[in-house]
Image (tube, rainbow, N blue to C red; front, side):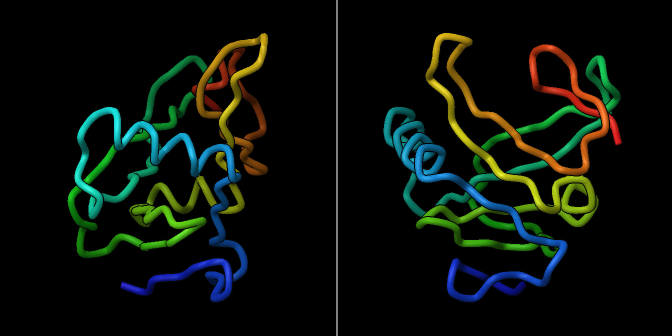
Length: 122
C-alpha cells in the first residue's frame, strides 16, 4: 500500500486533501474519544442519502488490503478503491461558523448535493 504525504503526492486524480482546520479537528476528536494514536481516519462513500451517495467518516486500527493510504498534515487517511473513485480531488475541511459545526466535503465530482451537505450525486 503506497503511503503519500504533501511532499510525495498521490497520482493526479487520486488526491485527497485535508485543510489545517480539518487535521486539527481530527486530532481533537481522536484525543477526546481515546482513539489510539496509530488509528487512521477512514473516508468512504456509501449508497443512500437524499442525493444518492453519503460520506462516511470513522477511525480504523489499520488499512484494509486494497486501501490507499495517505498521510496528510500528519493525519493517516484510509480510502478503499471504490470510495476513492468518488472522492478523488476532494478537500475535507472543518467549519465552525454560524451555519453549523462539522466536517465539510468539497468534492469537485459532486454534480448535486443535499442541503445538509452529507450526501451527493455524481
